[in-house]
Length: 143
Image (tube, rainbow, N blue to C red):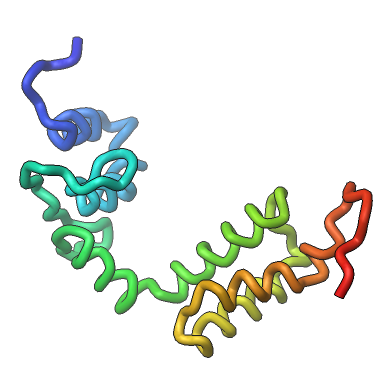
């Protein structure tokens, strides 16, 4: 039975106290706690929420500003790697493959050079051979 009158955070913390669940949840839950000020579709919640948390590596953060600072100052390369992988995979409609790694490296480098302009990333993806020559298309995109 689910206890009544608990916040979402309290429910998650209770769930995470289980040994089997805690292995993963101690790594992923803090990121969600930092974003608790927003609902499931990104709207800011009316009532104040506890957004303070401690990440798996011991870093204390509070809210989206704290998470942003942590990512930019401590995990920027990891973030860019995953961001580029996800954008490319989504754009291609498939999983990223080993042959895509050089393009991902170029995407990351170009993002840095362009001061992280998203339109530069999109331009690079849509002009790539991977995008222009997607298997199963009835046509090839002209230059």
